[in-house]
Image 1 (cartoon, rainbow, N blue to C red):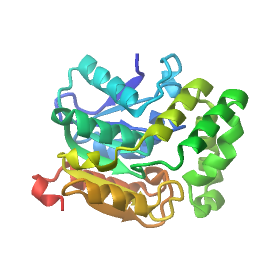
Image 2 (cartoon, rainbow, N blue to C red):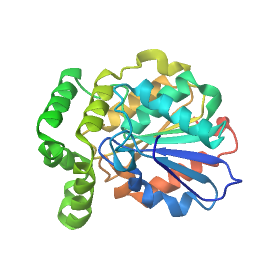
Image 3 (tube, rainbow, N blue to C red):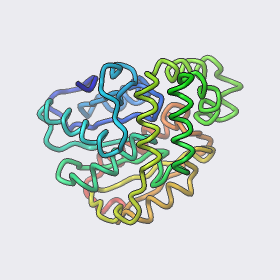
Length: 258
């Protein structure tokens, strides 16, 4: 069973927060105070991450998304808003394409319609299976935060590196394979949920150009770039991230998303 945590009022609209590869649901702590005043906030861990260590590894974005649907059904949530970062963004796109009646509003942060070459993800998966997540931790953590954060907040960087290496090797590798196969192409045009795409101006993993591609394919989608943010933009620039997130989630109609 997918490990999840619910915060906020039980009678409010629900927003689901979906993590980046290598992180746990704790990555959304900077968003909880702002969101939980007005929303029920459902966070969950991908298989092999955090409290999801006992989950069966999943090797496709569709499989990860179907796990979310099962979680929503278990909780009795018929329709939710969804905010996903990186891998979580891919899950959100799949849900909005294939289960549109379940998604109210959509926020896609620091994510992509194609996460680089499939062979590179397969190579990372093989490395992790052979040598553990520790083998890729230094290289990946360099992508998560800007050099400024590395210099000024080394304890924060170390904490997220520790979060990454706590992941189960097989679960992490399965998510790598899911990212390697992710390529929705023009299917993104099927998304009808009001969509906000967020990008970090200094994100080397999913730079703003990849956000522009997503926004150009989803009808009515809007792109906002967070200046000075790396890949984990919600952690590095939480105030601006929260402002944009709340503005989108509380907009009165889809006409406000242009």
